[in-house]
Image (cartoon, rainbow, N blue to C red; front, top):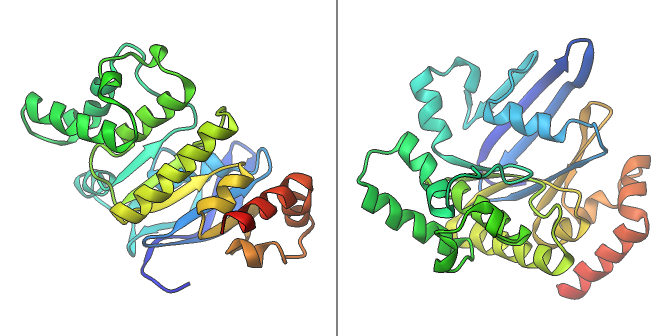
Length: 259
């Protein structure tokens, strides 16, 4: 794929005690693409994401962001780097005692120096960008539907105007209509804001709708990383079972009809 290499994972090894999750995993992410990451349960998709964003320390290998090894950065350099990305965790991870606006302001309070009034104004802009109405700003997460909570978490991920967006199962728990609308939103934001999106998902419709490439984790490595049209021709047994089963074929037909 052409384009600037923005994230490069080389020979990643992660383990918990004697349990090895990744062993020699390689991954490339290019600027401006939407990359989907799939794999069976326990294959280490979230572990990979958490290693890239620095929540986990790998046992071996390198993670380079724009050519710089993140393990060699100073604390200040890491802080500046992390301001450039937003993360939507699998269950939203919103602060239950804070309103939607206060949740979106949380990363601003941590990383920016500005007045409360300006932070509130910026937070409301992010909330609108995530597709929520102004009435949602003052609500607590418990007062929102599942789809609205996902959008609130997305607004917080966008709080610092990131270059890279990491999404962990963004449509999990949503009904098909809400999931489809969320896919459309992510696709539109990626295009309009020039975002690089790295997305863990089990949702075959999402993969077909908005992903430029899909990386498949199996056998402790990325065994394939390609556009879906190429990926579905890969003879690996797990890939064929995943994309060639009834749900995979239905998603492929729906994606072809949508195009």
